[in-house]
Length: 210
Ligand code: ADP
Ligand code: MG
Image (cartoon, rainbow, N blue to C red; front, side, top):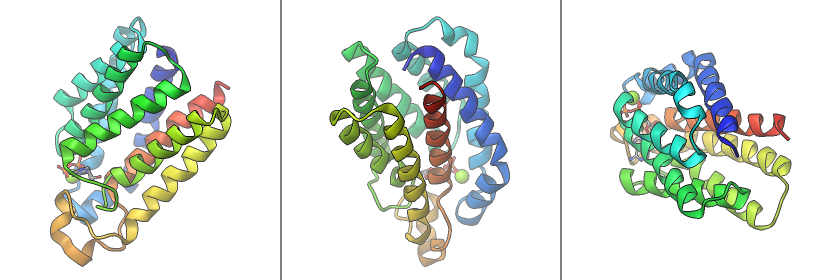
């Protein structure tokens, strides 16, 4: 994955967030405080504005810079968590110094692990991790098996969607929705929805570049 593919992915993430404004907003209004869309839009817009500055960087340097930017632009719980994700990815890419699918799988997992550490959360707590953890596990398994990128992308799109839907019937034990108890049941987690949209956008860019 080159820096130009990363930049195209970020543009498409920005566009898909904007296209799903009312859905993301109403999910956070139902079980949070209603600001998740604003947070995501602010972060996505700030990254798109950095386009020229990022274009000349290596993928690891670009992802590190994106993480720093997200830390200073997105508020709420999701800002520092997503910033950790990008910085975790950047660190592994820098250490490994290659852009193979296996290395990206490792980097993605490392980013997700940082979210887990920072948020002290795990699978099944009705957060973004219910999308990110199954996607990370599947990405590593398929990359290690030497699966082609098209098959990997199609599988990840489906897994992200299943993870997002899985949050609907969960009780939240982390984040703002944790105070709602059973009243959170029946609502998809907003962070899970935005992560599913982001994974869908990145996979579709990769499929187009196949
Ligand atoms: P806030 O909750 O501070 O208003 P946002 O609305 O931007 O921030 O983000 C809410 C999302 O953040 C939730 O839907 C959930 O997916 C995610 N989240 C919240 N707390 C955690 C946590 N401890 N670990 C992982 N994800 C979390
Ligand atoms: Mg919120």
